[in-house]
Length: 119
Image (cartoon, helix red, strand yellow):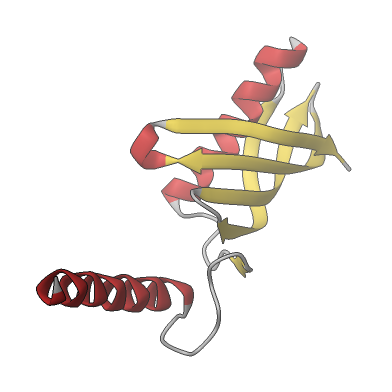
């Protein structure tokens, strides 16, 4: 029985340090649950999320918006990844600014548009 408790204790310690490592960045800034600014809005992964938001919005609303660029954004780790982006879209030759929220779980192949607002 004692061996069983030692194993459980070691597993608990390993899990604790893994969670601790995930929740705190090297500079001590808490990351899990907090929004972190996107440093490079022109990163291909960020652009892909912005394009996805426009494509999904077009499907749901039968619109024909064209993705232009990501202006700024932030990410949040929450059992997946929330992407909060400010993007620009072209609508009938005029540029509009939109705020979008996309939720993604890459391991489960889940990506969905949570909100899309023209500002």
